[in-house]
Amino acid sequence: MADLSKFCGVYPPVPTIFHQDGRLDTVGMGKLIDKLIGEGVDGMLILGSGGEFCHMPKARRFEVAEFAVKHIAGRVPVMLGISSPSTEEVIEFGLHADSLGVDAVLVLNPYYALLSEEFMYNHFSRVARAVKSPVILYNFPALTGQDISVGLIKRLAENEPNIIGIKDTVDNISHVREIINQVRPVRSDFVVFSGFDEYMMDTLIMGGNGGIPATCNFASEITCGIYRAWKAKDFNTMFSLQNRLSQLSTVYSLETPFFGVIKQAIRLSGLDISTEVLTPVERLSNEKTLKLVEVMRRAGIKV
Image (cartoon, rainbow, N blue to C red; front, side, top):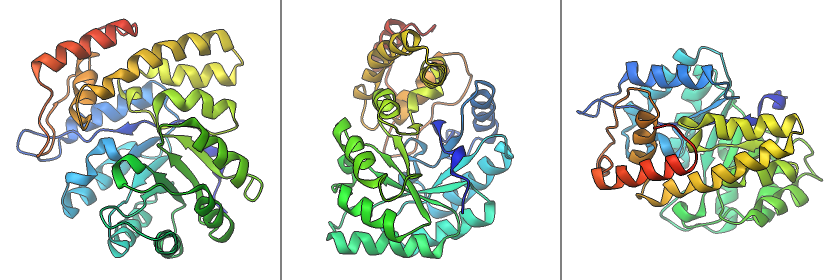
């Protein structure tokens, strides 16, 4: 059995840093990884949504995974996104993840073609049985077009021991509540991470494990601070930081998708990295950058 105690706290979804021509910027990405580890994150998600996996060719995804795992070098646990609409390709990415020795893989339900619940079960079941790395489900219905129902999560938790948890990115905290209420009785160690930054505190209060907040990349004092205050039972600090996080979370409404927003925020907060993003997305405009500065300052972040 995998050691699940490591899957707690704050796991930022690390952006992939690129040169202007779209090549991986290993120097910039290495600086970002080192900064986050130095700030005390509990783990990292590589090639999550904020890592732009959806706009990368297969070879680039392999390259990013290999670089990140080697650079992190066991300093913190690594969760690696391996999602694709193709079950066969997810398994291929998963076997590559196995070869790198990651701590867990993160898997979305297939997107584009809407699946019956049985077909969705088949996807996760096949991946979980083919891949050695522990599997964490990734529920993001706003992007995939389908929710992973609580009933299906419970069935997978009961029948597939290699599925160890979920990142739940649903804009309704009751979904996390019901996962905890219904799944924990059959799998007491099932890991529950919040996908939305500002729901991490509520997730912890209800018995979840932590969060995967993109704002941690430039405001770790807020997100990691909430988790540390929670562990220390310093609730006044936790509530104060939560108030700042609620203000900061409006950065996600500045641009869709938010890839350029997060990179620009990292740069504004003092780390000299490239803010290039992969097409069809473009870098954050000057006008929206000014709005980003306003949001960050309102949340008490020095810019």
